[in-house]
Image (cartoon, rainbow, N blue to C red):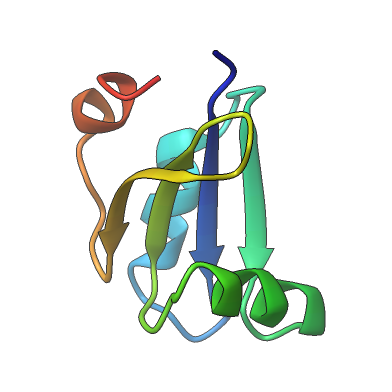
Amino acid sequence: MSRKVKVFWKNACPKCPAAKALVSGSGNTELFNLDEVDGMAEGAFYGVLSTPSIIVTDSEGRELAAWRGEVPSKKDIVEWL
């Protein structure tokens, strides 16, 4: 099963650079800027209300795990991949 990590961030978010750095270099990651229309649309689909938010999805886009408003450990994310 192919899983993706979706990171939702905003320009003014102080924790967002750490969230993006946590998943950098991973080929199965998508970044969504909530200050842009495409990011807002994807964030609305997943009910993202705070940043940073990191969501692990399956190949169908179903949410498997999520961390909203926090930066999880890399270990926590890897456990879901």
